[in-house]
Image (tube, rainbow, N blue to C red; front, side, top):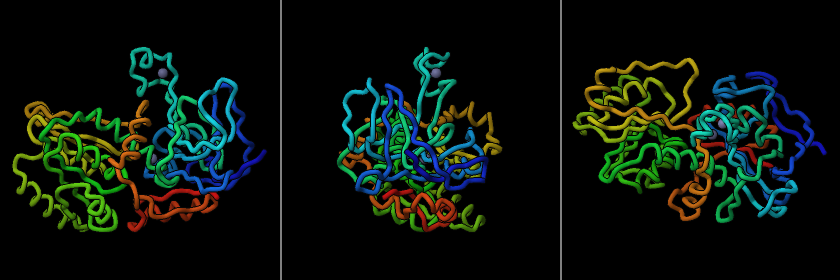
Length: 350
Ligand SMILES: [Zn+2]
Ligand SMILES: [Zn+2]
């Protein structure tokens, strides 16, 4: 059988190609995006823009799509607990289990870490195969909302890394999907006051409608005016914040974010940046003020937590995906991602 969708031959070069269906091994589940009646989805995020440019460890040729929601189309002889047609989400990460890090229980740092949609084919061609231990059933939310489970699983890992304490004052830069999904569990775990700082616009409006913070600081797009607003923010919170999260992917904001961290506080680096990006931070500030700089990347065992949070509506995602495209419209989708009117896009199949 043949399927088709967008495939990159090299960075920035892609075309709609025909692909043979992946063969499944005895431990695999074949996930279909749209073979059955409903429109199933693959989320698109800022990481895909870095992959487009060949960054973030992307390997070519490559079918993108790392936030995939589909139905079980087939499974191998060793797979238990799935039926054909089950609605499922796939954790796009695979770990080897035998490298230096895996053998020490640090699987996220696996030397052979494989990310579907980054290093091996993802979901944009309509079918993908995953080992069954990376596939999870869900039922109580729409396919498009289920595309948010991947970022929600990253947020669950982020929470573990941040380990917020009761009474935390939190500042989060960025009101994009990644930030909004992290903001909600942070709100419910330890925060006593939370500020979201981001430009005015559809993302900030959505943040407000999701009740994602206690205080919203709208940063002007003009850099001088934005710097002035940041100074006001610093003056309003003279002791800074226990937790400052950089969730915009802008290294200049990251460089400034440390100035908002209270002594003994945490600076969380939470987005994907350009491979060439550098920041300069005062080492004396980090030493004398005992600032913890925390990186949080992907996750390995957090899909069950993400599914539970969305199921219980402790993380609300309605309205985050506000634009959908067919897989033949990948260029339009890439263009739209750069518009400030798109909060998050998804590819749908029907
Ligand atoms: Zn993503
Ligand atoms: Zn490993």
